[in-house]
Image 1: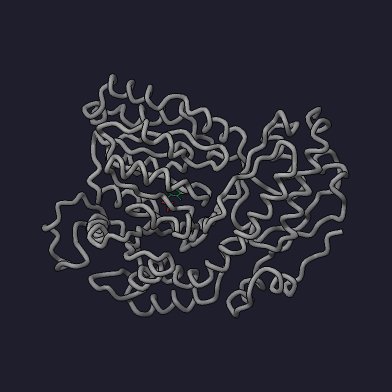
Image 2 (image 1 turned 30 degrees about the vertical axis):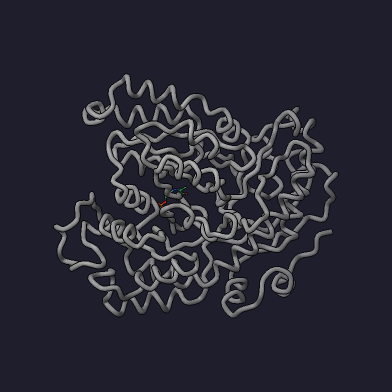
Length: 460
Ligand SMILES: *Cc1c(COP(=O)(O)O)cnc(C)c1O
């Protein structure tokens, strides 16, 4: 029998107390209520009692200061960052750089804008190639296409869902200008492998850390290992301002270039009204003062949330590893932390007994709602078609002939491991890891009883 978890239990086992967290917990349903049935019982999809009848934590979660900060901004009339380095955006930049151990931060309107500005600051342009992963949100690829460059997706490691950095060197060509690893789901990509190729080929590494807030690779925060790291604060992300983004870097000159690219050529250091001094391709991706007001309040508790997700994510990995046909991700221990934006794992249909789609359906019947991992794309076939279509315009054809794109498509190849994670991957959203450990037990119990009854479920 799984006993309902009280707020007091939760505070004593999972999180240290603070006024903000207490307020947060009062507002959010975090605790699953188990039905009291054992794992051997009939799955809900076959008419049994659902494992869980309560909902997970909602998202976003108010931390307390949002309202006061937004009102302060509203009443001050200081609604955009303007020609000053004071205000909510400027303060947020300092705070976000500090929490990540980075020297500089440029806040942006969104994560896509952060990526576009960072690539613009590298002067990425037509004919350049950017090595990245096929298993990502489309914004990663769009940021490359925005510069009329060619994305070169390399295959992934099915144990981590991340691009396999060991394949990056073979994908290098004379046109390669940048490595753009993505820490998809918040799990760290193997940065040792990627940085080694960057160094060998003397090309920059830009991390797409849009899902990876406060994740770590060997002691360093994700987004601070490459030349720059790009973040998103869109509402679903682990740090949310509704919309928003940022570029982190330890190279202050590069930060200045990013600043100019995101601010119609005007720099932070120079006379802000002099827009003519910059030979940069520029946009307006400035963050407004309102999302920064929300972000500064949210920022105060993201470390505590990151700790809870890490503890629960690793615990659930251990529980699921015991179930035949379930493959949790493998994450190194040494100073490495996943941001767990997505809790991802694979279902091998042969060993588990039913396929991923039926598994998700059966888990849904148990009251545990996940999704099929892969944004519905992520395969070589999809990306090749997407890029070909993107450049099937008169301008596109002037840059890339059919022969060039044919050669490119052949180099991309079949990406079999990406195909595998797209068809076998399961995702749970990050907020499902924000409750007590007993929630993880319920998730694992549900998966176990589905597996035990897989043959019967398969019959339909
Ligand atoms: C969310 C996301 C982006 C884009 O961020 P927006 O703020 O939505 O523009 C880019 N890359 C990845 C991997 C993302 O998850």
